[in-house]
Amino acid sequence: MPAVSEGDASRGRLAPEIQVILDRLDPIPAAVYNGRYDLLAWNAAYGSLFPNVVAQPVATRNVLWQIFAMQECCSQIANRAEEVAQMVAVLRAGFGRHLGEPAWTGFVRALSAASPEFASMWAAHDVARPGSQMKIFHHFSGGQVRTVSTSMTLPSPPETRMVVYTPADEESRERIEWIRANPEAPATAHMHPVTVTG
Image 1: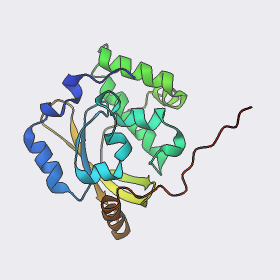
Image 2: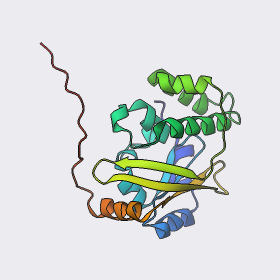
Image 3: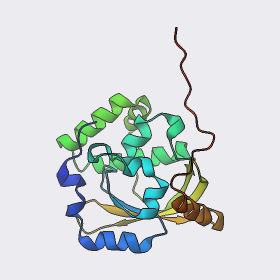
Image 4: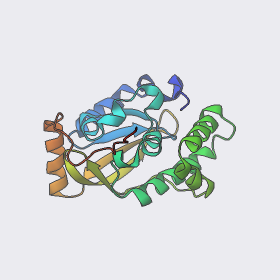
C-alpha cells in the first residue's frame, strides 16, 4: 500500500479539542477518519474494540486497507456484505473530488491490486454519503457488538469526520466494557488454516 502522507494522516493537524472530545465520549467508541478512511484519531474504547487497526503504522492505518487486504476470517465486521459495499460507495463519492491526485489514485490502484473483491465493487461506480447506520462487529474475545454509527463532519482538516459507535443494546454496552477491562483475553474459536507441505 502506498504510504499515507503525513499531511493527511498526522494527528497533529486535527485541532487539539478533537482528541478531548473523543476522550470524553469514552466508554463509547469513537474515531476520526479522512475521506479515504485513514484513521486519524481515536479514543480508548475504539482502540480496545479494534486493536489490530490502531496498532498499524501510519502507512497502513487505513480501515479499508485492513478490511480488504487481510484474511476474511480476521475481519471484525459481522454484517460484511452490506457494510463494505457502503464504505466503497462513500470512498467513490470522495474520489470524485480528488481526480488525478496521486494519493487517491495510488491508494485505489494498490487496493484494487491487493483485493479482487474491492476492484469489483469499485468498478460498480456506486456512490453514497456517510450516515447513521447499524454496524455489527465481532470481537475475537468479547463476541458480537451491535452499534449505531453516527458520522459528523469536522470543520478541519477538509473531509474529516468523527464517527461515534453507540452500543445498540445493553448486552453490547456490557461487552464493550468487558473488552476494555480484558485487553489480553485470548481469541475464541479463531484459527487460521494450517497448510501441510511435504
